[in-house]
Length: 486
Image 1 (cartoon, rainbow, N blue to C red):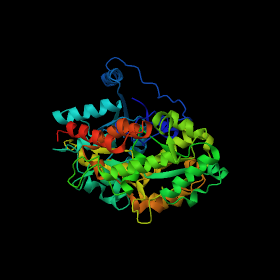
Image 2 (cartoon, rainbow, N blue to C red):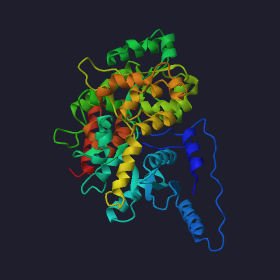
Image 3 (cartoon, one colour):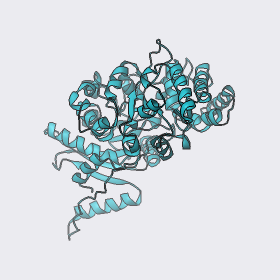
Image 4 (cartoon, rainbow, N blue to C red):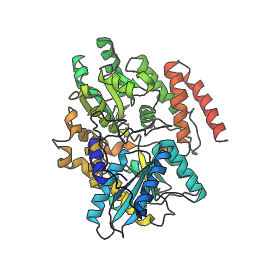
């Protein structure tokens, strides 16, 4: 088993490669890798002595896990009376986070200590294995991290996840409601988020200033398009990002227009006028050189990082969890980036940001330890302490809004994310906090397929091939109807 010391060091160093956005192209709980990561190793394990069956069993379990691609770490109390939980995740970095949260929990709750066995499995393997376990009624863990684009698949029919509404009550008034809604169904909370994922505008203040553009004057999308055209005419370079591999920018525009991928009855309707309008808005921006395709089709990937780091783009519309990407992969931009609210269509626009990316941590309702597991998970994901740890180590925008006005956090001179930007990102969070929304479709079983269709078909057809918007939407509508047997 890994030892706790190595895990805590790993948490501070932010050292895992992460994939948190398969399917719908959404991401955001951890950086894809860390440029300042240092290699750490666990303490050596004791040798197996004659008659030492416990050590022999432990090492045998490790060998079996290694053979299956699974990594297991024991964290928490050594008290033999401690509640032992089995937790599944697809992100190694979360192990270090949970190690910190377990220690804090045990410190504050000496009467109910816990110990967690964290199982790290490959992304697809974990979600598929979980589905099989829940369907069969055997082999499920006590708690699990479910990526947002897969979450709706576990909240259909006879939901096997625990309703954590009551357990989350002590934190609910402090947490961004739309983020909780993303993991709720029919008024019941089935997952606790890791961050808000508020979509913001990252402006390269230096590049814009050199081109005679003040980002503070960009309030509407018309302003954005005009500034983009001016920037292109002045520099010959692209202004903002247009991705074909993610739908985060598009979701924001669709939400601001009051649209969705569904009709009034909740059925798939991706060929509706609002979807077409949002695509046309982006197409108009592209033709005006306000946005341009990112190399590789995804700004949250190596080619995208490199393009921004080299000054090929001046604006990025993405969730605030991109902070850890900027700090780790776009180091040449240190001291140049300002974080601001995204533009709106006009003064009547009520959607000021949109939640994108993330992971919902759930409790399996059939677990014999479900009650204490829910109490711990809500504490570990929604408490003020948890939010501070998420921001300080990962640059994730904290779910608990009490952190947003805590000057010991928002004005911490030792925080590397605050030091990176030219302004304070918490000013932007506080400015948009009443307008952070989600699409209703994001909570349905249809959303993973919708996201995949747009990321693999629609965006490529419209922005790369120049196909007619309505034609491609009608094609995808037929495909999705066939998939769900409408």
